Image (cartoon, rainbow, N blue to C red):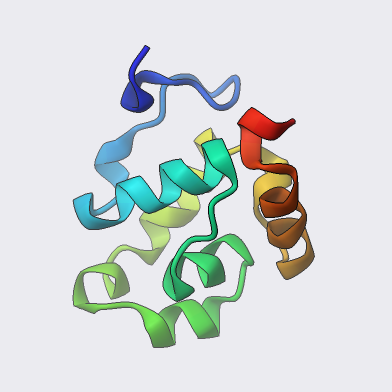
Length: 98
């Protein structure tokens, strides 16, 4: 199963079309391996809207709602929602470290 076909939750195979192509690897590496994402994605996973909006490039500014859809429908709930959850997720090594 390739990384793009891997299911993270009972939501099924993630709809990567929700995420701009230049951010897909960062999300996948964070969810699967717990690799720290860049500042924008860190803010998204931490549920920090103001920080995410301030760090977003033009494409991501228009896509913030799509990130929320992706997280809600496909990401493991333990990997997002607060700064503390993001730190813990990285420390455990993502799904692969669980």
